[in-house]
Length: 474
Ligand code: GLU
Image (cartoon, rainbow, N blue to C red; front, side, top):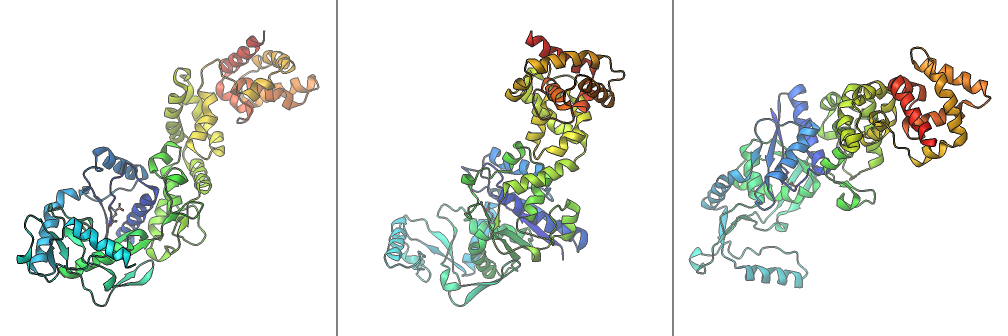
């Protein structure tokens, strides 16, 4: 059997990281079956029936997020709104078959029903008053809604691929609206019709949809359609144990992208947030495709831990080729340095990347640490660097400058040798010379090995930066 999964986001203006995890699991499940089973397809359906919220921009935010994460879908993305005629058709089929009925309740009546239920401490449910009633009694001027004639006896069962056997008493589910009075379909109907017509075999989505699944199963049953299998994913919580929301910080994938996270790292982190393969933490995409299955999805809510994500990101940064990191960091530096962006930045970064990437957890950090390579002269100094460059340090630098200028070949080894010889000759510790050098050449007090930095900056730039500092002291 070919497995067909889908991701069915409602456009909200951004791709929520919880939704991204849902998309990832659906994608992996389909890919796993495509490669190791008898076929798999992953579909994208945009649930854009709320016309107010479904702007092109909001749809693009989801599509861009998925593309950035590398979660490609089969075929065209389907617009749910484009299918409302089909949804209405199914509502009328249900009506014709006696599995649905017209309800003429006015908004006031429904409000009374809700108030009465609340007063009596009962759950708010539609009481089925038009279920058996003769449509000839319909009040004039009220457009009816179409409601499902839901089964009231027995229970609805789901053999959830994550939560196991779960049930709800059918007396708990009321006759839901399928088609509104204006002829538009409800979410509940649209989802079922689209999933059925797309031949979805597995619905993998958040546990917050569990109740919807029971209700949707009733529509499958009424239509005599084969229902898909369900897998509900435990929710993601913030550090305080509450459902992850904006008050915990960024929840949009786009923000993580801006903050310098790599898509591979975010996917790896989200994969492990709710699914495990032994104690493996770093899992490549190929391994994930090979290993992914719903049986290893946990049942308890996972906690989102930004520090853990940053550490996974640091790992992926170290694994990324230097040239690719340069390409990622350069636009950030161009934007932040503006006119101060040096023409040689790319060459210098390429040479310095091997060392720089060992120390950064995000691309933002990497760009910050690399900025001194990309900056034109004169270099700005941070407070600690300026403090390092006191009168004594400057006079040492002045003497050292001429020794460095005489170094043949300008290699890190040659520069280190000359600096050590100078330090020994004047009986100061190497650090007393190297720290001022670092301040003058990088504008900061922490950097990659200073002799490597000098080699990468080259003779003219290095001596120029020293001269800028020495000239400023005069
Ligand atoms: N559109 C729903 C949402 O964004 C998901 C529907 C579904 O997966 O069935 O929460």
